[in-house]
Every structure is written in C-alpha cells, then in structure tokens.
Image (cartoon, rainbow, N blue to C red):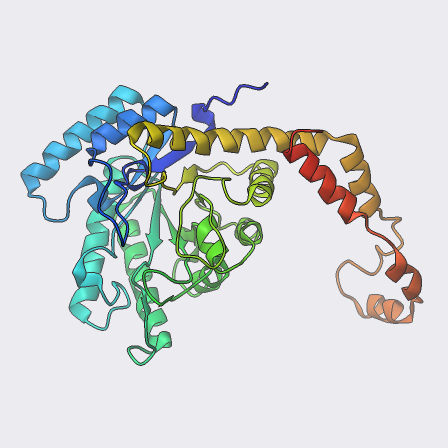
Length: 388
C-alpha cells in the first residue's frame, strides 16, 4: 500500500472556520468548545496540513479592541512559526453581522456598502500581514428573497464597482495578491447573484482589471444546483482563472452540507483530482468542509486526515487509470484520427468551407459506431473499487 501521508508539497489547507467549527446548526446548539486560532494551527499541524486560511473575524473578532487584536495576532504568529504552517489565502466575513442582512457590496444602503469596502480593505491588510497571496470573495448575503427589493442589474453594477475599487486599493498599496470570486446558487439568501462559476467568469471580463481576478469554485456550491463541478473547474482552468479551489462534498438539491471530501460522490471526486493533477494545478487544495456534528475534536482530526488521505488515494488511482493498458487502448481507439479531417478542422478559409460543404460523409456508418464508453466507465469503477 502506498504512503498517503500528507506532505507540504501537496499544499493541503483548511480554514480556521472548518476544523474550528463548533457544531452549531439551525436546530441545535454547539457540541464542541471553541478553539483559539493558535490552537487550530497546532491541530492542523498535528494532522499534517500545509496551511491555514481565515476570514478576518475568524482571527480577530469583529468587536475586538486594538490591544486584543494584537494579542491574538501574536499568538497566531507564534503558532505559525512553531509549526511552519503557511497562510495562502484570506477572506472577509461579509455575511454574519446583522449589518449585512441585505447584502454588503449590493446593499441598498450606501452606508452598508461603504462599510463593506472599509472592512475588506482592513481584511486585505490583515491577510497580507500573514503572507496571503489569494483573497477570496464569497457573497453570502449578495442576493435576495424577492426581486421587488432590488434590480439585479443594479446589484451587478454595485458588485462591479466594489471589486474595481478594491483592485485599485491593492494596486495603490503595492500588494502581491490576487482576487478569487466564489459562486453559490442559494443559501443563506433565497437566490444569490452570480450563482455559478460560469456567471463569475463572465462577470470578471467586465471589470477594470480582469487580470487580477479569478475564481474559487467550490464542490458543494455547484453540486447544490445539480451541476457538474469538474466542468466548472475545467472552464476556469482553460480561461486561466482557477486561482483557488474549495474541496468538500455535497448531495444535489440540498442545503450547503460541506461534507468530507469524496464522502458523497467518489467518482466525481476522482475525476476532479485526476484533472487537477493531470493539468498540473499548483495552487492550494483547500478543504472547505466540516466534521459531522457528532464528533469531538479527536473526530475533527479524523475528518481532516480523511480529506487529505482521500485526495492522495484518488491521486494514486488517477495515476493507475492513466497507466492502465486497456484504458489507454480504449482511449486511443475512441480518439482515433486518420488525418482525413485535418483540412476541415483548422482555421476558417473560404476554400476550406467550400471543400467541407462538398465532402460526402457516411452518416449511417458514423451513427452506428459504438464508442465503448460503458467499458471505459466500468474500468474506472473497478479501479475505484480496488479490484483493478
């Protein structure tokens, strides 16, 4: 059996809010005592993580005094120094406080929009202080329960104005940091603006500095809408916009569950890992997931270890899939190309178009060809089930 021990080069990260989740839900009180940010760092180091990420208020409570903030930061810095953990990503909580009940950047109240900008600028400063290179924006309250409340085009303009402002702030400060936008279809709002990764990619092209902004797709958020997460990731990668990624798992058409990575849809997780490894994705593998509410902190450690171990097992199975002779022979057959179509499938010219229009295809024969995808998928399942 291979060694599935996480190593720094795997770049596995967790948020303070993930392993630090105290098990509260809409119907139940917390089941775990809160841990300090420093204690969470030590816990992550124990299980072998590479890094830790945070919202501004995961680290510094929203009502902390300057002296309290400095005390927390000193303890957090010491924990990072003691363990060697990195802070690759930071973000801002623009959803918990009542001020954001009708959104942050898209709020109808200009004072709320201005406060949100102030809070993010301070959050960016905090992230940069601890070495973050990516800053994520999840608009958890940027949505509505009724479209009577706000014209969605107005909401998009406000969102665009906010991201443009913050890009200019980063440039003015000389910070080496990129933005990653995170989509979600619903929850906690009835509908959230820019609901999918595809929406975000289109939105980015309308910004003043699109080169500074990419996406942070999350497994659960695309699966909530019944979408194929791999396809969203591939589109982001092909566009050069996969700046960060959130790994977890999720049943379709449910509330946001944030299950342990790979625990729900193993085949989807396999093809995601295979894609990231095949294309050479170099960013963090961030687990934005939570342990079951049934667990104590020993169970939380098992949850964190499980996320990383599953990724490494699937990475090994992807290598096996790529090396399997029968699978590769099937792929070669499926993708066979005798070169006869090369004159038609390149760049357009009038001559090419006229020649293609005149070409006689054997439509019946092409339609009868079996593509052997059943066999290919079964071989994939046998690798995943450990019998191949």
